Image (tube, rainbow, N blue to C red; front, side, top):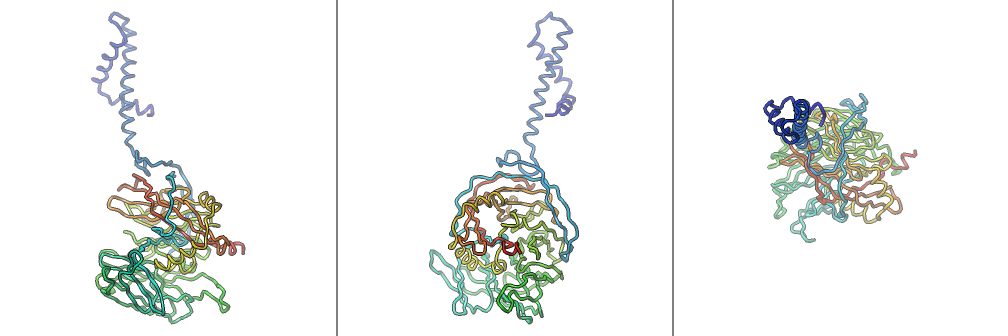
Length: 502
């Protein structure tokens, strides 16, 4: 306690307590008849000593209950608070450079816990490269055979029911709602060579008990020479929200089958609303933009109270974050270079939280084009299993990734201006979940790394389990526990080493 705090406390103590303390303590040290002057001096000193002890205890008790502005006092979360600087680039609504700033942030370094063994065979979450996070549901299966698609509900390896349809549209996603299982299919062409492409989409709601079709609707949006891609599908309060974007027509491969320029221009964002009960299209909002970006590098990482949080890679593989309002207006765009990537966003207690990872650009994991756009669990799981099958554990890479990878949780205002940052080393950021009591965040503690022994494509797989941090209603960490939720992140060194050398 500072001396000025003691003096202030002493000034606020009533004269009665000063007198009582003086008389009580004086009797302990002097007999009657001793010198009056000495008696008065020592009595005053003893009184002040007793009062000081009283004030120390009072003020200490007050400060022991005080919370800091990042972690609740007494939360038993090992951490230290420091200050850090990160570079943020502000972009115009059309994606061009506007300004660059060094931001000083309060940083909370979390020490984490002991890594637990991850379930590599059937992880709870699979991340495709640049933190395109998919929560796995192993109760459903998807197959394609003889130009037909088969979607089934399975239990203990046996199909409880099976839905069949012509495989005319790509199955982008399936989501389990209270009302049923929603299949989202749309028209997608990997080569993008048709300039008269018509973007088609179909919703199919299946009964969870028997697989029968509750309703099915198809939608067509003629777009001339442009191709519409899906960035995210969400269900909320009886409505289905689809965020999509339009790119200029382009071609991935040249006439020799070689990969060509993978940069494209995003020309608009679209938010479409549908009835979750009937599939009826309710509204469509569109806003024009001019964003130069990498092929399939755009995805929505969260539909929040203040809008959609979109992340995209520019032509130089730098990550940019874009906030799109519910009315489909670009609110702001910021960038953090090629070392940061974010994969989950939530809004809580008046702040926007962004979960991601920090890696050196040379080893930052990206995904192949197909895995960026296909949020389809069966295909994603198939690709993941194939990658793991041809890979082996690599202790050298494990050491590198632990040394050079950190989970980050960026706390921003409603214009994506960072105010604080949480960091845990030897980990990467998992999902954020909004709860009735606040927010939870998974920091995935790296436990093993797999790589292709022949080094094909620079493929790596990072596996770990989550240490889940819970935030209270004021945005402070109140607890942490090893929840043993398994995560696996797989992809390629992005940008590839061969491309970097050129």
